[in-house]
Image 1 (cartoon, rainbow, N blue to C red):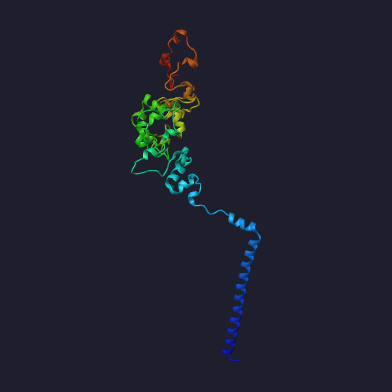
Image 2: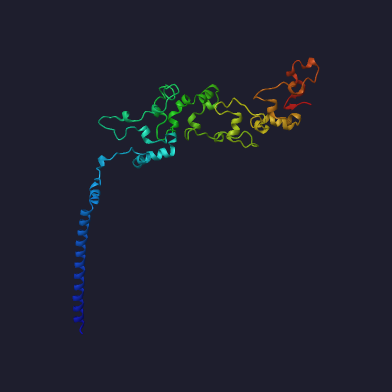
Length: 308
């Protein structure tokens, strides 16, 4: 049997099979459609259910919900990031401040009308301006330049107004003149950002090589806004005092007496206070000699360099 004859026979068989298959599919489709139609006729409930399905609503028939803060952030990403990183108490829903949005009209120039008013939330106890009525600070944006990061205050631009809010600190530094009053400004110390407190060592060396002093140690004696109003605790160690009073420390160490072991703060509970000798020594001499204790040094020298 030749190969041509075999190929021809195979083609005839394939044609017959395909014809039979297509015929079955068509008959099955006709039969299925007929059954569906008969089912609907015999079951009115199914037909009614299909008719009752609601038509798809137009977008303008849908009730739109207010934008969420996250949705605002999808377009206003830089502002969202500013609030997220530096917003502080302004990390609230955008719509609490922006009651109207996307309504600016260049023709109307209505920017001021649609912007939030700080006084909606920020008022004083008496209902007035939050920081008082001084015209220099009434415009909130003069200090709080960006309401999305309200404490990012441009210090160099507002240093003339610091005392208007920081009245306690302003009073201390003005009423107690020192180089902190005459030689530096608020921004010189607090330049990095509002609320930044620098280390004293940024400008000042430690008083004593024997004592490693941090800012907290410095401020036990020198309140920063009135540094000459020196105060200290009873337990302050002598090397701290020696940082300024090195000559006194040298005398006490050169001529060792019972005074050498006494803490400076025991005799001088307040800075520059010079106590009478009788506070510790009573009246060891006749009464006529003790009438004027300022003359004790005539015989005994000074307390830091006693003549024995």
